[in-house]
Each structure stands twice: as structure tokens, then as C-alpha cells.
Amino acid sequence: MSKTVGTIWNEALEFIKDNVDEQCYDTWFSPIKPIKIQGTVLTVQVPSKFFYEYLEENYISLLKAAITKGLGEGAKLVYSIVMENSYDNSTPPTMKLPSSGRKKHRPQSVNMPVALTNEKSIKNPFVIPGLQKLNIDSQLNPNYTFDNFIEGDCNRLARSAGMAVGKSPGGTSFNPLMLYGGVGLGKTHLAHAIGVEIKDNYPEKTVLYVSAEKFTQQFIDSIRNNSKNDFVHFYQMIDVLIIDDVQSFSGKEKTQDVFFEIFNHLHQNGKQIILTSDRAPVELQGMEQRLLSRFKWGLSADLQKPGLETRVAILGKKLYNDGIEVDQEIVEFIAYSINSNVRELEGALISILAQSSLNKKQITMELVKSMVDKFVKSTTREISIDFIQKVVCDYFDMPLELLKSKTRKREIVQARQLSMYFSKQLTKNSLASIGQQCGNKDHATVLHACRTVNNLKETDKRFKTYVEDLQKRLTLA
Image 1 (spheres, rainbow, N blue to C red):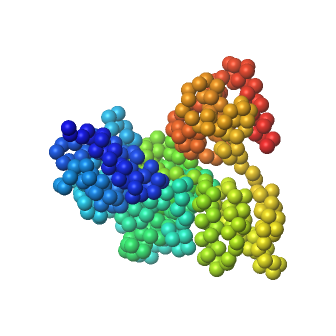
Image 2 (spheres, rainbow, N blue to C red; image 1 turned 135 degrees about the vertical axis):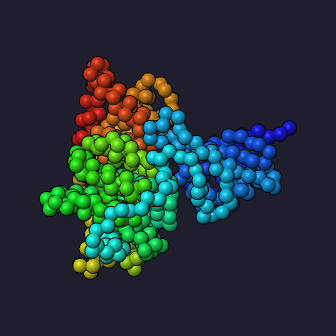
Image 3 (cartoon, rainbow, N blue to C red; image 1 turned 120 degrees about the vertical axis):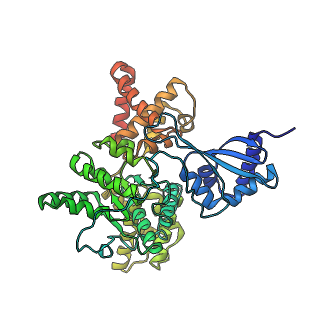
């Protein structure tokens, strides 16, 4: 009896599980769906061209070995790519691409909407007299590299995508690459690291890092000096454009118009665009829809708060680079106590090292506890999603596991919705991040939860009491 496509693929997944770690498996192999088998050819569905390229780049040998076990020698893999987030497509476009078996493979001929790729090379007609392209300063910080950017579950996708862009700027399907997340989580560091990597690999390319605020000010100056054309032409000459804190464009219509013009020119000519934002594209307010749609053409990758293990690794790396030895117990205490973001974590460590050096004191647990206590009190305490969930669970006397479960019981659903509502109100987390921490829900579920809570507190007196009680507990905590 011949095996079904599902059986073949499940056997392949078991083999893959034994050869990669759990996080890698969840990120790169769980989303793959088996479609059909024809002879020794297995067709699988992946969610994006980026996904396909990453698998071909990093796991082709493993995939080949996995399907050979089930289909025998001569087994072949074909990818069916369904781009579910393609803009303005009611029916998602699909592509069928054969597995190349070559590490540096990039498909040269693929039928895709122009919004996703444009393979026609358009010669830049704009030249500013006397402007030497090679004289453009990249504005990159050479200290921000991939080597000193600690990878963890909180940033693995963003870092992987960034490294791929660093190897092949403008040559992957994630253009633009948008990095988003809260304050101090490493967006700017990662953006610089990509630029530094590109300059190392392609010295001839012109890379430019600029904040959105500085871009806006330059644009205003160009209008004042009647040199708008020179401003536009300058940016259209860039090979890799990195715009930091793009949310600053919100509400600035003229700036958005000129950036839209520059964006289109760069994208159509295969130039790489990298953006950072403190929130996901779907949450950006005051942005023109046509610009938002372009932000979604490539890949949006979020950076979340680092877990305990990642915080320990960050501190360990910094201490190692500074040539300082500290007991592991002390490092773990600092990492456990400072959990808001990477910037504050490193700030606390610098304060401790400075206190030790200036007063010629050894770094002891007593000194660290004293410094951490002062540091935590002097910084604005940000309520976390974990804390909100704990307060809600205590209020309704239910275990946290039940809150995050898939049960549809009314009282559990309401508690879950209240957690999402207050997480949206009291934290800076993105909707996607809130949903993930509230039972792996998507951003649409979080929006629905917020609307439901707002409606119920207006129509249900008992529910209104829940909201008011929880509000007091959270704001007084």
C-alpha cells in the first residue's frame, strides 16, 4: 500500500526534528504544508518567497535527506509559494519553484505581481553635476555589528532576515525589510549591522543610514533653498537606504509624498530599503495608504523583549568584550531584575561597573543589589503583559494556563479579552506581540478583543465593574 503525502511528510518532519533545535523547527519547518506526491516529486507549500530562499540557502541538504528516506533515491522537492499578504490581491498569487540543491540559488524567472518584484532594470536618469557618489558618508556606526548582536527567540527572524539582506542587498524577496518593536530592543543596532555587513561584502555600494527626523528636516531645507530636485536625486542615487524610526513620517503629507517617490525609484531599480519603526505597519497612524502598502511588500519582522537567557547572554558578551570577570550568580541577578529592554539592561551594567571602578570596590552581590534597586526606582516602571495577565488571573481566580488556552468558555474568553485590552492600553507592545503572548492569537483577534471590551463596558454594568477594578489594581501596582 503506497504512503500518503501526509505520511511521507510526517516521517520527514520526524527526521528533521532530530537534526535541528526546537526553535529552528518551529520557525522554518512547522509552517510548511505538504500538497501532493507525483512519483518521486513531493510538492510542499511555503508562505513566502523569503521562506523558500532561506530554506534553499540553509537547509536544502537536510530537506533532501529527509524526503529521500520516504521517496527513495531521485526524490525531488517542489515549492508552491502562496503569498497570503500580497497587496491588492483577493486571490493570493502562487509560484511553483523546483528545489535547486544549490546553496546560492536565486530564481531568475518568476511570474509575480509587480508589487513584489520588478526584474526590469531602469537606468537612473538623474545625475547631480559635481556630486561624487563615492564621497557619500554612510553614517553607519561601525560598532553595531552582527557579531555583538545577541540572537534569541525574541529577534531570531529579524536577525536571520538582516543577515540575508547583508549577503544579497536588493536580491531577496524581503525588500523593503521593516524591523519593528519597542524602545531599546535593538532595531537601530540591527539596521546598522546590516549596513556594515553590506559595506564589508560590497564596498562599491553606496549605503546611507538616516533617521526619519533628519530626512524630514533635509526635505524642509531643500524646499526653503529651492533645491528639492537635488534632494530627490541624491536619495535616488543610494544603493541601500536605511530609514530609522519611520513612524516619524506620520501626519507629514509632503514628506510622505517625496519619500514615496524615492521609495518607488529605488525599489524599481533593485535597490535595498531597510526601515525601522516602533510599531507594526498595520498600527501606523497618519500614513498614506499607498505608502503603507509598499511597507508590506517585503518582510516585517518584530523584535520583542529578550527572555532571561538572552539577557544573560547579552550581559555575558558585554563583560567579555570589556575583559571583566563577574560571578555568574551576579550576572543572572542583574538579568532577572532588569527585564524592560536591552538599553536599560546595559545601562544598569554600566552604572554598576562605574560605581565599582570609581570607588575601587569589588563587584559583589551586595553592591549589585544596591545599584539595581536604585536603578529600577529611578526608571519609569513599565507594566508588562505578564504582569497584566497575573493581575487578571488573580482577579478572576483562574490559572494562567487556562487564560492562554484555546477554550471558548465565556468567562475565560472575557478574561483573555481584558488581558489584551489592558496590554494595548498600558504597554507599548505591538498588537502582534500582545496576541502572541495571550495564547498565540493574531493582531486581528486583539483588535476584536479591544472593541468587545469597549462595547461591553458601555452596555454591561457587571463587566464595567470588572474593567474599573482591574484598572485600579493595574495603575496602583
